[in-house]
Length: 109
Image 1 (cartoon, one colour):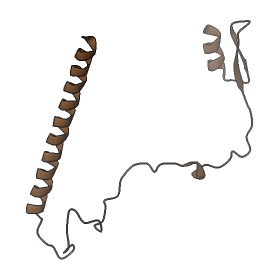
Image 2 (cartoon, rainbow, N blue to C red):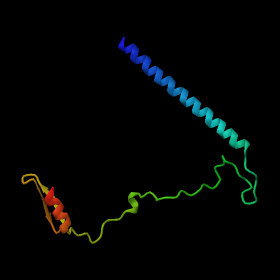
Image 3 (tube, helix red, strand yellow):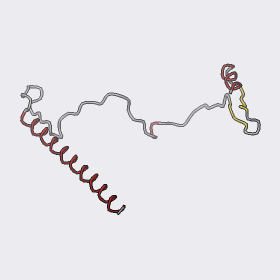
């Protein structure tokens, strides 16, 4: 009985998903057809405009460029100038060569 209920619930969800997919595809086709019908007028600058052409110029994306590992170099002149650690036996923070504001904050924790 439980297996039948589970099967029915899964089948219902899958049917709903399929209906949504069909609706999306129908809307997409209608949009593409409308774009083909409402082709913009030909201008002297771009006389071979086609919204589906692979050769058309893509607009540049604004924003930050993704960084990959090849763009990152090794650190140079690295120096360990300060240290903050936690002593589980003492339950306190150990620090050396840190700003007084940070020292005061760590002492209150």
